Structure formats: structure tokens, C-alpha cells
Length: 372
Image 1 (cartoon, one colour):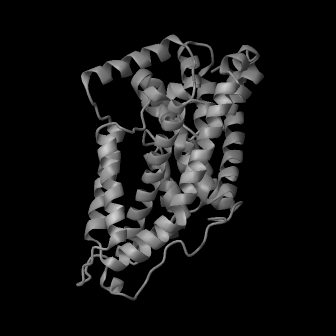
Image 2 (spheres, helix red, strand yellow):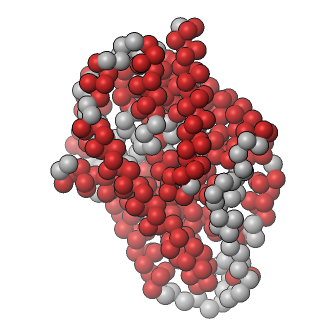
């Protein structure tokens, strides 16, 4: 593992951690601003939870998954909604699919949405799992002291403070880094984590290089990152001192930042070693039998990161695997969205993966038997 790999993994860790933390800050704000009434309403209707979560999960990239994971860890949505979102989400691979195979991508998105809603509602109906397991019920804390009772932004005594300063500096640096592409949730760098020499992969890299030669180009996902960052920047800048101190700093930063960062970095390092010291070509060379091939595709689906799953997409585009195998992989994987869930609730992550594996295996086997 060279220094370039370490720098790349570190940059991806920063992006994932910052996005999750900023989503938590926004959720914290809306919860306090509405005194919890908005999220209480969401808690009461499991149908709405599941439907909205599945739709949010379909958003290409990892933003949708991050959002629902954040809501789940704050006990706003239940396990069924979380399951629906992570079934519907197929990470950054969705961006590639809609670029190269838009019709098939639309079919996959539609099928994932239906499966997500059905199993999300089924889990809630059967009450197989607790609505929110292993999560601290005090995740959202409403305080009535120190002027917060006058709402988040109505405190008369505005104080800047060193904690607010640190938050603002970090967010501004993050915005600059994303804008200049000093760090980025980029796809051209994913070759660091997996090297599959296919014609389509080479074509993708050529497109990325061409984009770099023309100058900085901010993609749709980067724009979303910047919108979220700007919103949080304004929140930190304008919020009253108590909200910054008690909610953003003591609750979000102190309780979540380090844990999410370390877990994410650790998992990305492990993924790097697995993919570099266990060549995918060697595994695939013994995977021409239908069932073994399906298990290979599902094995990749367990990886909680975007990038490795592109192997499955490229194999499908070259006609080496059927549509059902690509669909099964899309059901089982959720891009980077699983990383913060591992950090917050490993038990929930394992439960989600087990359920999704059973669904994906059933879909994959059906595909091989029926022939799609």
C-alpha cells in the first residue's frame, strides 16, 4: 500500500465523515426547531416512512442512504424504513448505470423501489425487529435552558466562541476542497481500490482524464455536497450559542465524529487490502458455473463501499453475467451508506445485510432458473 493509496482512503474518509456529520447537524436543527413535532409525525406513520425512505434511497450516489441512516440513528425512522432505503440505494454505481445503460438502470430502480417498499412494510408489520435497535433513545435532546426554548436562532446574546470558529473553519475548508477537487468522491480514483482491466473501465478512465485536462468540473453529486455544506455553514454561523455548544458540539461532534471517522477509515483500509491482495480476476476465473458466479456477485455486494461493485456492472455490460446477477448485486449493496451505520449500530447493519442477502439470493436464483 503506497502513499497515494493512503491519501486516497484518507480523503474518502474525510468526505464520508463530513457528509454524515453535516446531515446529523441539519437533522438536529430541524428537530429542535420544530420541538420534535415534525419527526414525531414521521414516527407515527410507518407507511409514509417506508415510502419516503425508499424514494430517498433511490437518489443516485450515497446522499440518500446517508440521510436515512442519520434519521435512523436519531430514532426518527424505524428499521423498516432503514431497510427500504438501503434496498433502494445502489450507491455511486447508479450514476454509472444511468450514464451507460439508462433503460436498464431505470428498470433496476423501479424493481428496487417495489422490493424496498414491500419488505420495509413487511418488516414493520411482522415486527421481526425492534423499530430501532441498539440506538440510544436520547439521541435527540431537547433543552429548555440557556435560551434554546426561544428557538434555535432567537438568542439575544450572540457569542462567536472557539467551538463555532472551529466548525466554521472546517466547513469552509471542506467547501474549498470539494470546489477545487483537492478531495472528492471521485470515480476516476476508484481504480486505486480495484483494478479490473476491461475496455469499458479504460473508457471511463479516458473520460475522467479528458475532464481533468479541461479543468475543474463539478458533477451533480459535488453540487449536492456544496449545497449541504453551505446550509450547515449558515446554520453554524447564525445559530445561538447554546445550540452550537449543546447540540452541534457536545452531541454531534463529541459523540459521533471520531467514531464514524475511525470506523470508515478502518473499513476502507481493509477493503483496499482485500481487493489488492486477492485479485478479482483469479476469483472470476473459477466462477463460470451459474451458482458460483451468483455467489461471487453477492460476495462483492457485501462490500460497504462504492467502487468494487463496478466490476459487476462491467461484467454485465460485456455480456458475461445476466441481468438478474446485476439486480441481485444492486439489492445487496448500498454504496458507502453502510459505513456510518456500522459505526453507529453494527447489529442493525448485520441484520440489514442478512435480510438483503436472502432477497438478493432469491432474485438471483430465480433469474438463473427463469433465464433473465
